[in-house]
Image (cartoon, rainbow, N blue to C red; front, side, top):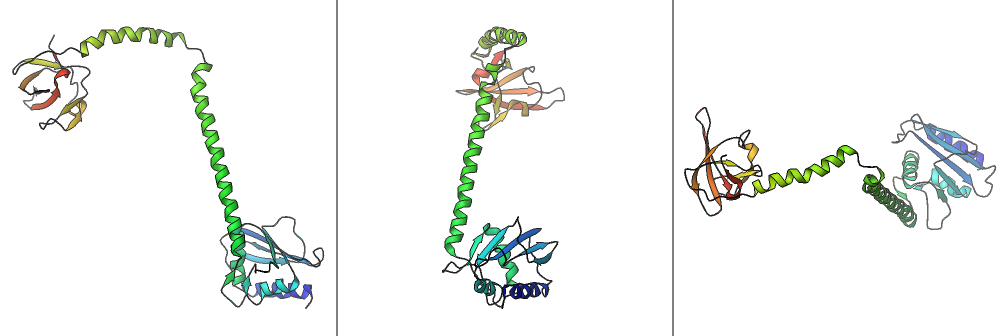
Length: 260
């Protein structure tokens, strides 16, 4: 059997199996006889859910398989193998594309098993792992560059006069409100008090379960409360709404201020 006759035989085999299905849009496989690579070559193209064979070299391919004519014949006839331990077939291409071509062979060969040399798979996987590692390093570098640019951003632009005025007046505002939030008074049951603006939480009757003061009702700092009980660290406050509803809760002692 000449190489051309073998090519026609392979073309007939694929033509007799229209049920071939691959999960890819295109796949180009070039087959070359290493004894005469310039004259003895053909390619197999998977496109539009069909197999097309042509007896020419192709410039762009996904897989290139080079071997003796005998080994190429075995690949398409006797069994589904791509690489043996003797390394008769040389394969260029990604592992994923090689597996797609292997599936294509399963439709025309007599066996449903295949052999791809383990060291080639390991080599391909190690290259993929190295590529992922390099990509991680690139992403980390880009992240650091971006973070450093954000850190240095305020130094690159002058502060506006509005910001300077705001920064100058802020300590004055804090100096006025800070002593008020730190005032503490010894209050007794029955006294009328208000909540300090620094009070942000209240407690249930167990004195431990904490909630946001805004979950209790709106405008908590404008309301007037009466002290109904006192313990070591907390006051129990009570507020009577205009509708006659009564709400009692606990706050820390330093969160209570006298009514002006």
